[in-house]
Image (tube, rainbow, N blue to C red; front, side, top):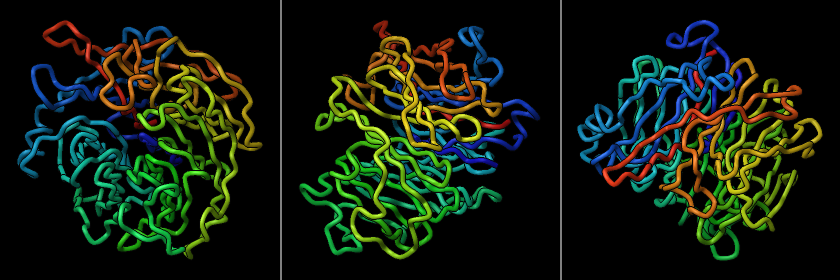
Amino acid sequence: MRVAAALLAILVTTLGGASAAAGQGSFEVWTIDQSNTPGTASGGTLYVYDGPSLAGAAASSATPERIDLGGAAEELCLERTGTAPVRPHMLAFDPSERYGIVAYVATGHVLFLDADTRAPVECIDAGAQAHAAFSTPDGRSVIVANQNGKLLQRISADFETGTFTLDPAATLNLATCVTPSGAPCEAPGLRPDNAPICPVSDSSSRFVFVTLRGGGLFVVDPQATPLRIVAEYDRDTVHPNGCGGVEANGKMYVNSGGGTAANLTELDLYAFRLADFSASPSPPNTPEPLVVLSDDTSADGDAHGMVLTKHGRYLWMGDRGGSRMLVVDTTSDELVGEFALPEQSAPDLFGAAPSGNRIFASLRGSVPLTGDPHVSMGSTPGVGVFRVEQGGRTGTFQAIARIVNVDAAGVDRADPHAIAVRGG
């Protein structure tokens, strides 16, 4: 099974291995509209598409399965935690694709769904704000980025039995901790705002790369108790707001983006050689990352999600503000092209069809609930479909499967963010 991280927001998308629900040779595309269920202050809606229905122009008329997360999921969270989950923001699958993992960014809830039946099976409240929750590829842990809590947390997982437990002893407080070099984890001019954004694991499950809202990055041992920093980077080395990570050719690619009042625009891509890391802590800003590309002067540039084309030869990274796709050759680490998307499409996160012939993107709405409106506001909320061409060196935007959530005032509040591909 090949694991491609996409954030999950970085999120991680698992490719290969037929799932029971999707069936041999088929697959599913899951996306979540994080806007509230009409008439409520919570909820959200999960849409599950039959993957082949999202092919070419026919995608615009695809009919998804629709699951109201304000129903049984909310009831389970109330039963388990005493509070209702709000704003389902990130989505990932465990390595076996038995469970969908949903992180709620306005609250601290992490929801586990049976991927076959879509039924909620467990809900854990991690605290202030669960921006992302991704399984490590070994299936032992789910690492939670508790954004405004400035905590990195671990849920111990047994995906065979469906048992999930928050491990308080593993928690790393990114606001108060001290790095291996003796520096404060958070400090002005160094790492001024250590809200964790996306925790992306390498395929060996030895290292988790944690991007930070104010800039900087930590590489963490996810198996240590508490979670242990093994590499530290400052904001001059890794810029703010990264939300994308994939592994290819022995390298972990991580980006930096905009979308906050303090850093509206940003577009950078870094490559870290995994062989250069070890369990022993490194000096600050080592191993040094390669800056693959950097465009921090654009008026609307905002690097966000990324995805690998089949066999990992090419990396596609979305520019959410500029509505374009950037293409990087992972063998040479060179930008080899870009192609335009529909104006104000606001591509957010991505997933790939198992055959490699299509890429899918969540497209933001006109009333974005997360991220600054200047960079995350879209006009066509839904799932965007791309045809992959020239082995991944370029592509064509084909269609949009629209998602609508009109409130009593007639305003369409649909705001898709999470997306992941299951089965194949």
